[in-house]
Image (tube, rainbow, N blue to C red; front, side, top):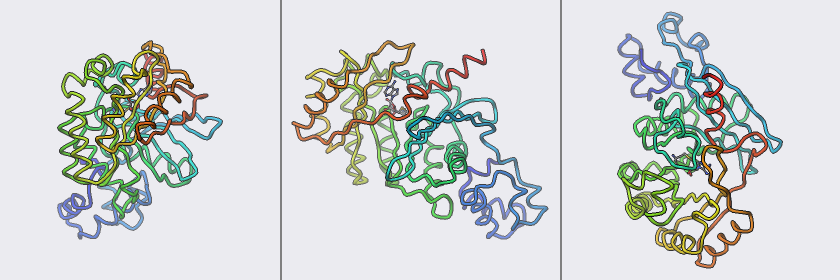
Length: 340
Ligand code: SAH
């Protein structure tokens, strides 16, 4: 049986034909799944009973656990149907509700400061499992999600086909109808995928997790640099910018004494200026197993000022939900430890 929530309207139309139903059933099913967000075929009351009974299981997340912070941030630990776990975070801003979702259970990119990759990759998520993180949160808070960032567990471009399918579904006006410009895909820099994605021109924002402007240094923090050098990643990002007209964001986590010196500020400025990129700074979130320490607040401000003097557009990411947990991937890791 296909995973119904991962199917496009065209694919549902083929399914309808295969079971001898008229094509308009596809639109009905799509609306039940993505606009009304039912989790059981039994609730699709506009469909004939026999058809409902022939439909597959629709549940992709079977359990949810939620921690709420004083600032309104909520962190969710979702258990998938096969017992794997992913994390999502809801952040409340004046302009709307932003949800940070996972694209994989675990990750195999090996970034040294990141908790999600500590235990390797468990598996890719289906489009349905990415959608359901947003749907579960929407139903939990009884409000729409306006912005989605793919900055939870996993490397989105390491799960490319499911990512593209998810993006098509979540932005379909007949479904949840999220605005394309309110979606950010964040990558550690899979240059060939960035180019492929640029050619689709989906109108979403691309964030590059740079964290170091020089190959030698970046290699010690992000092993992916062995496959794609900084200049390859930046060339691909420039291509994305040219093809889509969307401004690139550089993510840069500041680790004390590692990547927060003047040479790094200069190197980062040069790369950002060339691309017209926006820079998002965040003091690195300490992960016990890792040993990187965050740059002190004064150091973060100093780094920001150096970039701004070079004409770069910079923001310091506010750290929300600090009272409920540290870096992404930590809730899942704790749960995995408990299960051992
Ligand atoms: N794989 C994707 C998306 C997941 S990580 C990527 O690399 O972009 C989302 C963002 O959080 C990335 O910028 C990542 O580098 C950053 N990040 C991960 N662990 C962190 C930590 N301990 N402190 C600060 N940022 C971290």
